[in-house]
Length: 190
Image (cartoon, helix red, strand yellow):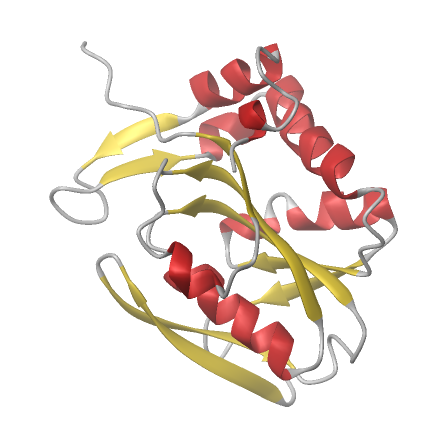
């Protein structure tokens, strides 16, 4: 569900978020219109608005863990976790976490990848949200859901800054709600 369909219709913060995202054509490979959030992060007000929308969404849902997907989920997850009084759980690429980890492989729009999480990062009964910058096929979020559920956490929702109107892999999310702030931007004429 898009934020505009859930009480934020006409909210100027959403337009600001959308306008702050840069579109980079043919990255990381031809045909991909990369949605670059680094330009959003450079704008203090828009960055804060993005975090505030997620905080408002999750502050009263009894969330005990915010999981952020490497690397762009790390931009929003820790701030949201601090604001709502939850722990932050990094979900990382292989070989980045010391200690014992569990792993989950998944298919990307343009390849394969894997996420890892520390064993013990979440426990039975934790209520978690998963944050990332973008959802297209749902593959990365699906792997994140599987990691958290394997350790006993309840995934309450997945939240993304950007999402396509019809997530091709919505069925991969095991029925978990998906909260999206804005649609992908198109390349503007120069």
